[in-house]
Length: 264
Image (cartoon, rainbow, N blue to C red; front, side):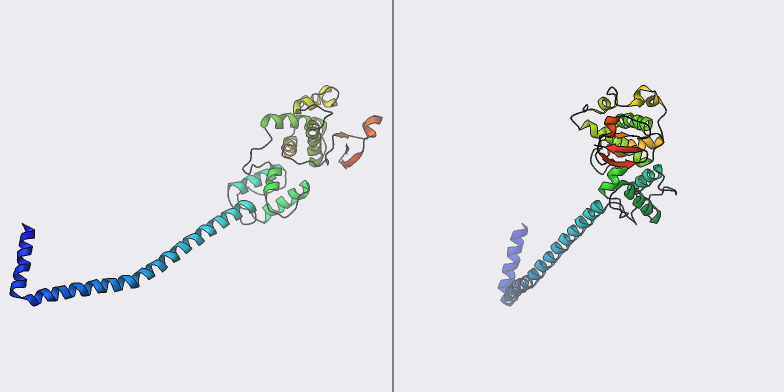
């Protein structure tokens, strides 16, 4: 019904005033031309805007990824904050290198403690807690740690018994010798096998092995299991003031740490 009325209305306009129809048609053509002109002008601008927005998006993605990768590779350094810094401070405090409160803020005191630790470990003393430093501290950086609680407890017990009274580096070195033996064809291929090998350690037979374990021995066990080897790859050690065994004294000496000579 609406269509019929519209057609009738148009017919009446054309019948009584043809100029109106001409005016409408002219305006229709003009509007179409204006639309095409506007379309030709606007489309290139829209294309430019889209390209700009896409470029800005790409730049933003690049900036985010670059900064994320930098944070991961640089790890903790002066200015860093968070749980990782807190863990670093706690580990350093356990070793007596960090003297103030644990606050999770990597400041000058934390850097100073990290440098001291790095020097103890014989690694680059740059004050930045990178992957090597974190590993030596026993802090996981995304890979499964090789040190299990059972292994730490067992190794700490023999370290405490064999290196009681030795400095911290000397304790770690004793633990490293035990671990080096596991990989040597002349010794058993397990931690318990090396420790309980008949005649290997006097601490097993004289009761020292069953004495209370010192806190430093637990830390030394962690460091040894995490890869620190201050012994230089030794598989033997002895105290020259306490042994007259000619065979052990004939072994090539790698270095001396505290009261022990470490040998190949």
